[in-house]
Image (cartoon, rainbow, N blue to C red; front, top):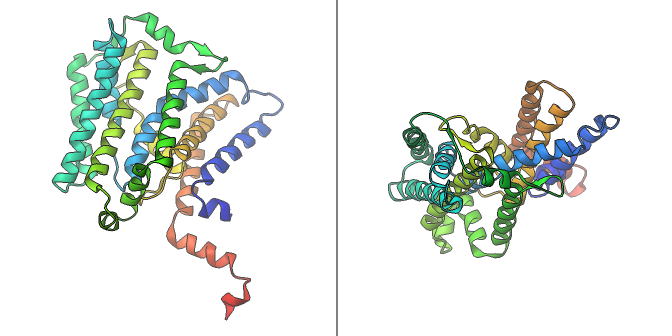
Length: 326
């Protein structure tokens, strides 16, 4: 229990391993959970939610929250499809730049005007959704470059696609940078105590704006890649990512209070969510079973993060120490 309650960096991996082991044992005779089809489905969920969860989780680490991610996600997909028929790389770049710009603008408003991130990013959500509707004339649009769509879905080693490999690469790069650079430490310091971070010389304003730019860029990247792979874009149909992304980030060890969270933990949280979805689907359970089980796991993790409960666990662990009983 101590491992689960006190080490938020180890806990996501332990939870992921536990979920995989439970599904594997339950479905041992049929082997549906451990099939290539199920693994491919899990990785597809990881690609769709992963980058959004990474960006959103980063805003949570600094004690903020980015509600605009689904709007940026959908808007970027529309921009990529509309501008990337002849030059896919250019369409992808324009989509990412749009998400980056949205994040910078929101970050500056929050920092300069001392506004709450909830209000600003809710406005950002409505604006980006509106832009997507204007760009597409409120209709789904096809992507005519089918060669790119096919290339995005080409499989390597039977399970990995280009989108999967790009997502894994981004997580790996961000994890390394967060571990070995000062930026990673400054982000955690900003979320832990902003006043103390300022005294320590941390550029809190720069971190805040940079993190929202990071969140916008990753959401846009994910939306553009998904639209390319589906050969279509919609202003509304592909934007159901906020709740899964937030759930995955919290399961992955990101604290709603800020100051805690790592990229690899978020990756483990996304894979846990993907395992719930694909696992229950593989064994033939109803969709609501996955939703309820995920909610229970989320509640369990949130309870473990409660400071009062953590204090009780610590007292329990030392209850037998004669020094503590004096």
